Length: 163
Image 1: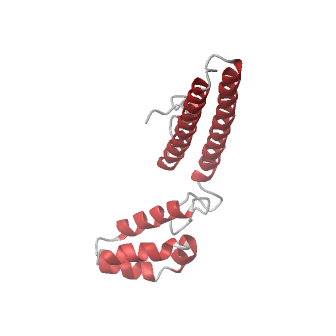
Image 2: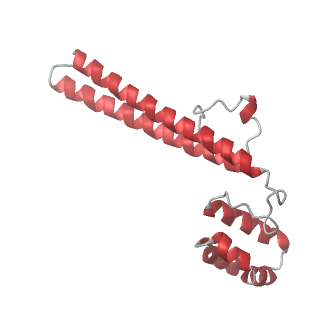
Image 3: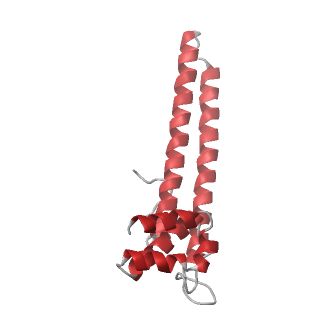
């Protein structure tokens, strides 16, 4: 995947975390999808104009320009949203007044539930290599129930599958 939604060689994007890189990839995929849809629409309009013997008309040119303007507007919105997400994530990634974010001492509630799932899974996978002890410790973790929400049962099932 070629990333051109933002210039990641700029100093402010030099040290992106894994979460931030996933945000960049998601935004790039969205941009690529918008670009492909615009190209497809231009092709459809060209063949429609060709079928009506108006392929050299100014109406076709205006329609293409309108598609390009809409694409630029949509891509700009995706880019600005990404920049805001990256800025917000970098603000929340260091920690808060309780110290750096670490599960379970100081969990990061700015993460999405799927990201929380990954953090808690990594924590329990690193605690011990004994699958039964890991599952028992997770089952007794009352913070994990509220922190993971719907993902609690999924992680429980995953840890139980290792037993």
